[in-house]
Amino acid sequence: MSKLNKILILIVVVLLVALAAVLYWQKVGFEKPYYAVYLSTGDLYFGKLSYFPKFALKDVYLLQQNPDDQQNPLSITKFENAFWGPENKIYLNDEEIVWKTKLRKDSQFLSAIKNPQFQQSTSTINN
Picture (cartoon, rainbow, N blue to C red):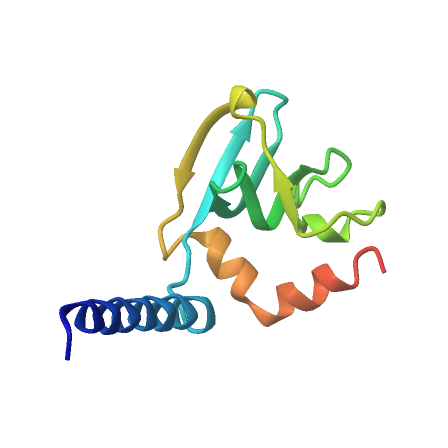
């Protein structure tokens, strides 16, 4: 076998391994952590950060104030359930971000959104 054939076989093997790794990561992958992002507008969003091709949040939740409800002055709403029907992704302007922080796995927010009762209540809010 010539040296060129050996190099080509090596390149094909490396590419196949890289392709298998990418496919595995997309299917099974690693669960991305949730972040809280506070904007200069006063809005607080929660979601999974994405940096490419633009800075964005996926699986987005929004913290809303309920001034008329003394027992529950704050609520968490799934962004895609807004009455105007946005997608479940929001692109953010870096200049508007005041701060961002990674949420711990034991945070109350993550406990709330992983609760099946919460999922049912957010899916019926504006439908």
